[in-house]
Image (cartoon, rainbow, N blue to C red):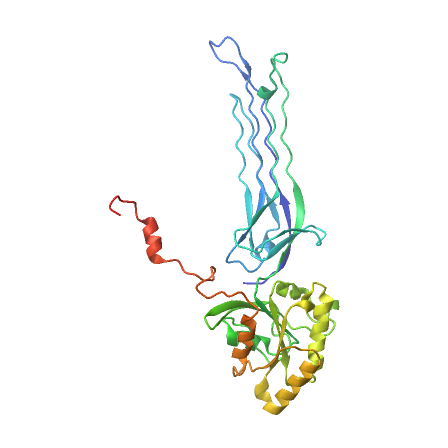
Length: 356
């Protein structure tokens, strides 16, 4: 499945149905009169967050969404049928922005959240509703209220508990593959990760979602490399894991480059808790690793964890530290992973009996 985290779509709610102009004429009935019914209400545009989606790729092929209009009013005081609402399903974590891409209209952070973004038009009045003592045979009616329309931007921000950041080729893909169920591409060259990846980490009876985004380089805030467009996917993370390649030219400079790009992004990413992981210690001896770790602490890193994504050394201590920033949630308590009780499900389907 292709990954798409931004899409522009056109929305239009349904117009109200027109009211009817009708007069009752029946054999053997002495007095007739107006009996035109009202029009039906147009359909609303509803956006709803649903589980099981993690991309906006469906909106690449369908950009226009229009709800149906209400039914026409008819004679014999029959009101037109109301149109069904149009429900648009989006992934959890989606933001809905106005056409200016600045005004946030909705932010879906939980499954099942929904919003009526555009309301359908009211149905028009039929001539029966205009009848009065002085207007016995009205012929006026209303055509029905027009629907609302607008262009909106959908922007997906993946929901993850922890996020991986670092320069290209820092070993982020190897790390997320080692600790989670992700299957990220690994290669001995920069930018092997081109789109964000999610993985579920299970550690000491608890679990959390880890997000890996493409590597940052100096000037990413100005569009260098892949730029900083994917940083939005770690805005909701509780803690960031900053991977630094011990075999790089200068680990301290590597840390400062990424920290500078996080600060330049402008959404307080630099204020999030940070765990610095000195990766690939299997390529250096313990003395060199400790020396680099001390340099990183001197440069401002509070927590430095020497690890190896390839061999697994030091990873348990790093994951222990991550758990300290997360809510106390066991795997069985996670509603997204809990499995239904087969006995309870069978009991619900079993018909009631007085012998139960």
